[in-house]
Amino acid sequence: MIKVEAISEAGKKLGEKIQKELLVEQEANAIVFIGALGICVRRISDLIKDKYTDPAVVCVDSTGKYVIPVLSGHIGGANKLAKDIARITGGEAIITTQSDNTGLWALDTLAQEYGWGVSNLSRQEMNQAISAFVNKKPVALVLECSDNGTEYLEETCPAHVKLFHSMTAYGLEKGQFELLILVSSRLYANVGIPVLQYYPRCLHLGVGCQKQAPKEIAFQLLDEIVELGFSPESIATINSIELKKEEPLLKELERALPQAELCIYSSQELAEIEIPNPSEKVFQVTGCYGVAESSALASSNQGVLAVEKQKGCYIKDEDKAYYTFALAEPQKKHGHIEIVGAGPGDPDLVSVRGRKFLEKADLILYAGSLVPRELTFCAKAGATVRSSADLDLEEQFALMKEFYDQGKLVVRLHTGDPCIYGAIQEQMAFFDKYEMDYHITPGISSFLAAAAELRSQFTIPERCQTIILTRGEGRTPMPDKEKLHMLAQHQSTMCIFLSASIVEQVQRELLEGGYAPETPVAACYKLTWKDQRIFRGQLKDLVKIVKENNLTLTTMIVVGDAIDNREGLSKLYDGHFTHLFRKGKE
Image 1: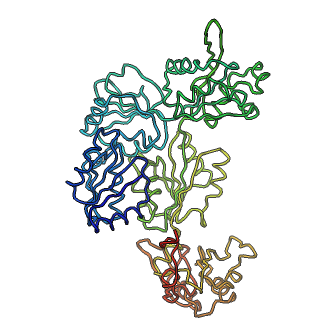
Image 2 (image 1 turned 180 degrees about the horizontal axis):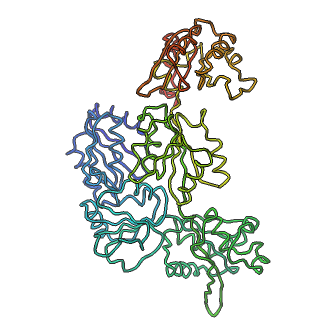
């Protein structure tokens, strides 16, 4: 809950604006004070107890020019709240926290941000770790798992931090570093230097037990997990079979591991999972071949067993109770292929996400002369950058799979948006066949670049509300219902790809379909490239425009009344139009 307090009429109006427009929810209590900083400090003096429990307090001057986090910058989120408010008021957030101003990680909030556990350090020990880090002492970073948090740390690793992926990695000698930041589910003793450890939620605990086994088994079981070298803090789920869902042992584990979710599976679900230690006896009782291993694997999405089935015995008042447990974790990080849309040509028009992939890629395979090589200049040192122009499909597959099988990142860079007249379908079929992990980052299509360069809105109120993306019929046949002359009957804005070489046919079909000879056209050559050329005219002169200017396959043909149109009023600016978020309509 965010409380806004103001001491002047001007401040009250600003407070109403902040309260209305602030979209970021604060989990902790926060106070926004609008007025002089001195008054703010006196007002909150009774609230100052402990930086780990103090509320976030932000002071804003009555004009909104300066936004100052006063209390609980990191832990309470006042720094972030100040930046959010500054964006609303158009002011400046005055941040004095060293780590924020130097772009360094906030070690005291990383666990909260990424849902990790954190080592039980005293406040003095945590402050010492933060001091060593922000003062740029030699720091080792060991990432023994992979998730969003570790990807962020790897991407933003400061110069004074050396990255390793294992505690046994060469170069991680004692005495070389003053602090070790460790992200791992494993426990290590006698490291020799101060350690700040984060525990990613990556372990899945499978449990089986006798009927009505004592709940005290939970603590014995967790002790055994520690003895095996794993942290219970990293347990994300507690798993078992429906037959055991009411067992006291599971209830006690759920209480002892508040971060973990209890997941119950049917015997049919578990019977389908292949496990290393199947038991016919267990099958006769439960309907599956092993409760602990199969439920752990089910929850880890068919990962790997970090600990195979362990049998335990708990003795109470001379009565014995038997139980089993297993730990599974996700598969180790494998390769990934990202199909990236390069945009229409200008290197600045690739998406932010696409550029990040280009900067991280181990292999960039780009589409020859269709994609400017400048787009690959951001590749990291040591990356392989290769044009696919001289490679057939099989050779492209072989190269990508070679890198993929080594667990590396491959970027397949296609012009425009890869899903529009791209050649990715065959590649995706190959990736599917070999069960390879891939994803598509969309790009700006050349038809959007055409609209921008023509300074034209391709949809005109009450005249044209449809854009058709198509191509002329050349070597690739067109479906009967998608011939140009049939599409032309719609009289919409039409963007025609890959058809400059058959421009006579294109012009004939467009006229046949119903476009008037005087309909505006534009032939756009190499949109957004350095040698871009755009020729405007009328449809009756399209062949002449293309031929006289020697335009090639890299030409987008646009036809329709939307070109250069400045008529028609959008309802958005109509005085009688009611906005969805206008007061009273929220």
